[in-house]
Length: 389
Image (cartoon, rainbow, N blue to C red):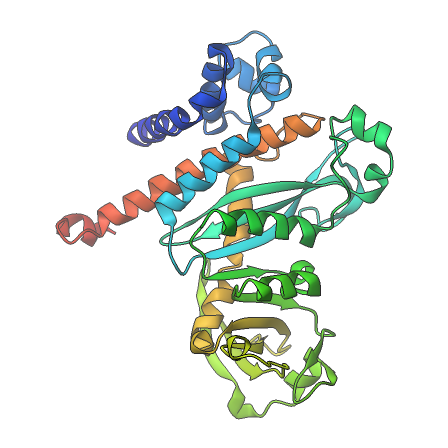
């Protein structure tokens, strides 16, 4: 245990050196390192008061200053986070996963809060919603970007936005639009990425899908059973109707990856979709419907629209890509349980981005250490460790 504490504390200091130039003054620079360490500490609730107490401060004023008023750029810190994650798990066949999570809040003043559906709570709650981008690469996955969803009733009330620190240029954006913004940032700086995946919120957005196609970016995106698709010609057919028409021989029993209770086994089928492809460039890519069927008596179906080079469109490979979407859910659980992602008490725009970014960086350190440990245990020149692993 002491060895593990030493490892992450040392690694945090290494990572924090990359953040050093973001701070003009030494006090917030030192406090940001203490804050990161506090996020990985055993403090039960990683809010301002308890973190300040753990840091040896008598009031939370210093913590609040770090998150609200000190001069440093949370987006520059996000870039440090992204580069750090890619260094440790980067993979040419890496998968960018997009999803949102809710932060239940009281009152009406926290930036972006309103009564809205929160998947975290499983119901409509007074909450904030954050959209996140996770990178699943070689041996692990960690978050590389984040955006706060601001409901239209907020963006239509500029005085309320101003009070919460939302800049004038921030306009209403849907969750898929926020996802595109983050994916674009990642692709534009050369994050190695083979695939994009996400749930129905993002898969049903045709604008997002068409944009990804325009960038020749392969994706496996979940869609609803009612999603209209071109199957055997330019006529819309619902995804569920295509699945119902499949013969028994179309289905294969495959694992979508290991889960907490063993392999995630389902029946899968892959169906080519019809597209008008006029150019040779367009013909290199295919469009497909991937269908998942549960093995229990209910035989529940799930649907994914696939865009990929024809040489990439093997069923087993696409199943593995679809299965990696679960990694972002594991990431949310870890960042909330281990790094205080949802323990914040800030109300303003800047404070939210700063806390969230630091929490994601703390989680990335844990991921990097686990990946490093896994590589050490499986090195060919370490047979004893390999047997332990």
